Image 1 (cartoon, rainbow, N blue to C red):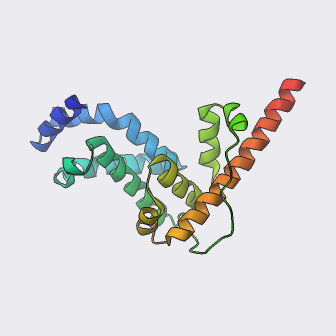
Image 2 (image 1 turned 45 degrees about the vertical axis):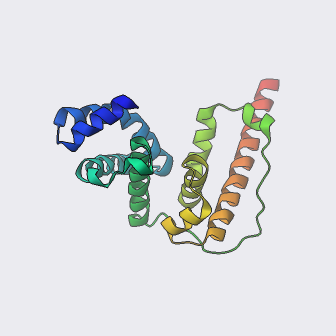
Image 3 (image 1 turned 30 degrees about the vertical axis):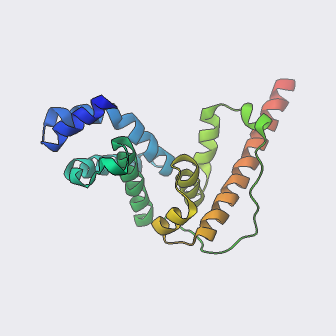
Length: 185
């Protein structure tokens, strides 16, 4: 962390080598964020590139008193992904109240799957569900913040998250039943 801050101070002075080092240290994390939100590789690369352009051209916007540099960079990446989804009109969110209840977690079902299999199921969610799931579960935003970011009500955010969880739970159950059946054969 200290090394990252040291490099950042050089970035602020326009040091190209420091920019390259910052990129090397953070690029895997930023690309993973882009992949969580965008299903097409070309859109991931666009968001990834735009993230670094903004990080380097808007470096004065980072405030260390409000959080870590990596958290700020992650937020920039998330915002870039949301912009791309909006431009592609893929972020269709209904601002309605649903009576979907939040599912309980079935630890046995989840423990049978690898992280890659769970990630793949999240990636299969519709863009709106996947976006809210990632913002809430992965990024840690609350429903009020998500609502502000996406222009929907907090209730709609909760509803969409509940629906995303139900879809994931069902997909994981189907997957584990298939795995159990194949193992029994």
